[in-house]
Amino acid sequence: MVVKKRKAKPLFIVLMIILLFAVGLFISWFYFTSPVSKESNANIEVVIPAGTSTKKIASILKEKNLIKSELVFHLYVKINHIHSLKASTYMLKKSMSMKEIIIVLEKGNTYNPNAVRLTFKEGKRITDYANVIAENTNHTYEEVISIMQNKDYIRTLIQNYWFLTDAVLQDGIYYPLEGYLAPDTYEFKDKEVKVENIIEVMLKEEEKKLEKYQNELSIHIHDFITMASILELEGTNIENRKMIAGIFNNRMANNMNLGSDVTAYYALQYPMTKDLTTEEFNVNNPYNTRNISKLGLPIGPICNPSISSIEASIYPTNSAYLYFVADKKGEIHYTKTLQEHEKKVPEIKEKGEWIW
Image 1 (cartoon, rainbow, N blue to C red):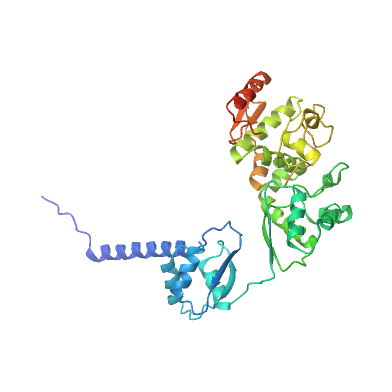
Image 2: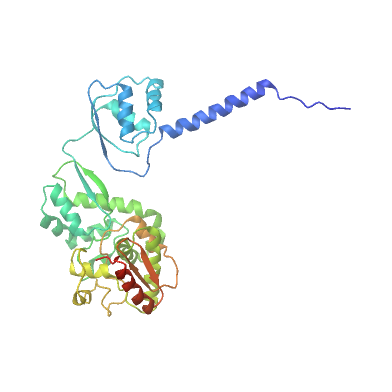
């Protein structure tokens, strides 16, 4: 007896096709209306001239990389019966969804022509940050530095931010907030913004970035931030910074000084634009780990590190290495013994790849 296979019902097949199409459409719609970059907080200036069509607005937004699809933008406006996108100058972000951008364009101008945007870069010192503030606001460099070093003010901050401890007020610390101000771009109302306001906005951003690591950082946070500040300048990415962190841990475990050149520059408050003399490298200073008598970490951070450098300080890579040296290409060479290290340095110089 031959059993005939039952054919799938045409209606069932049609329904499955419709369902799959609907699911695919939903996923695509969600993707194309979501933010271009959830992590980006940078402000992007967008000018919408008077009389600009919806199609042209979509094109402008796509050119600025604020939306993923001009077509979906146009459809979104049509489907939601949006009839008035106002001409003006806007400050938008890649972290905004298509819906959020359209709401702003519907409401009209939120752009403040008097606003000041301050960009504080990773790996820079408090003195660099003070220059940024002085150059873009109505405050002098000396005024900014004075506030940064005001111990009474710092004590109020310690009470308000869990990651600031009394360690930042040790005798010998140059700038108590060094290492704790989050590098980023910030916008303020105008040039009259108070220095304290700038500092506290940066501290709040730092608090947000450190929150996920709070358990690991809570006991020895000053040490972690100090280590991270060295890694920021010694390494070029999170992988080699983790490796360098492991090497520094090995050196401390073997009762060796860290021997970090960048700490000598900070001790002297010199820019890292030239090689130092032997005498300068050996200066006796609580920041200078090149001095043979200075064991352990510097007294405090030597720059304001990125969150990736902080992560590297928390999760170092274990190895048997005790030495490293970087060439001018940024490649880092690791060695296990002083003999290997002393052989590697002239090899780099012979290749013309020495950093200076």
